[in-house]
Length: 380
Image (cartoon, rainbow, N blue to C red):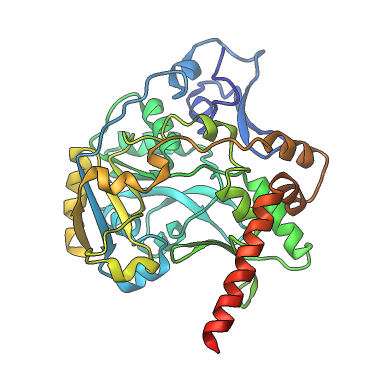
């Protein structure tokens, strides 16, 4: 059976999940991105994998019907989240109604994978931005089982993961709510692991990695009792590679979801370009959520958490204007093939990023030096 071209594959795993004889395995390439590999000897040519792939078959999109700037009313939730805490409030509502939540977690072993959350005390695992592709494993199969048993399910993932789930299910379920995250693209876990090993030299084992501090991108490694490493975009090579689209999955450069129309019931992200007269204008540094409502189902669940959040209505166009992810795919850097070559030749991650983006790395370092000089002069 033929699946989509490798550079179009998002790695959602819908084909692997739907295969009735389990002859499709998700195998990592040399950059750490998983792709489906079919055991042709075992394949019965049923065609389910081809008919499920969201990169081959039509995906249903909806233009948003409402747009809000928003924050949780709980300051502790806002502080521990990276963009207003709305995802937490949606998940809490589903858990309180006896449902299950599926989203990306980062555990103590630094595994980035989807997990089923059924307990309020575990919801913190879903908080925080994760600038790396998560492993869905058999999540789609689990969700189908829960839906057939009439359980309420909330799925939180990237747009391509949401599209993969939709095509896997092949029908709409009233007891399923889908949330997609505004996405710049995803690096592989291998890239993250290479960076961590380079920093720690395998002498210290970090228990957590953080990619955001308020509205600033960073790369922070911690153990249970100390911070090992904490750098921002001016110096950290992982964040430089991510923000400049160097280390993304190949499909991210051809992403059909980088558009205003959405695949999920709710879209969550950062509200960039918040007006000066906004009621949240003094809280920008904490991160303010953009909430797009894309369906009547999405509007219903938003109303269910209205007592837990503060909403400020905005025009749909205004809400999406400053966020590049609504206006086209990330541009593939001219040096991406060179970066791939360096990784194949076992260059260190930081050196590969620097050699692929030398001018950008130097520019950012100069900007940091200038910023530090200005701050020193202002203190005098």
